[in-house]
Length: 193
Image (cartoon, rainbow, N blue to C red; front, side, top):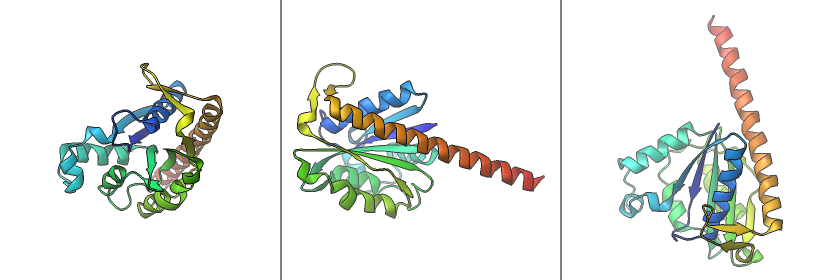
């Protein structure tokens, strides 16, 4: 199974990035391949001017096409997900998320913005034909602390527990979809014989 992890934070050092790294490590420990992408991996002009022929954009679209699922991490600004993430998602073809499982991960200054994923991000994912957007994980800034290890920081115990529960559900959904695809492909093979 392949999961593409997308960090939508425009900041080099971000709490949503820390949460994504912890999630990626958990998935890898459970046998899932993770390809991590950050907004910083793209030329800003390619995003702003929607350059679909950019090598990084072409690679991004192909990675999403091959993926079984996506982790999408974003800070919440002004009651919505990051504008940088929106410019990246706008580059995906219309049906790019059809058949994919998406787990949104968001961070914000207070609990007041926890519904930003439902009201702002989920409609965009729906427009890309995602049928399975799982209940997202929202963290307030005080639940994430920075450090210099490979994950870039630590999560408090409550957030860690919620993240791992969400990832278990994500992994089960990925397995369910993979099983359904395999079963469907087997049926098509029988019909072709």
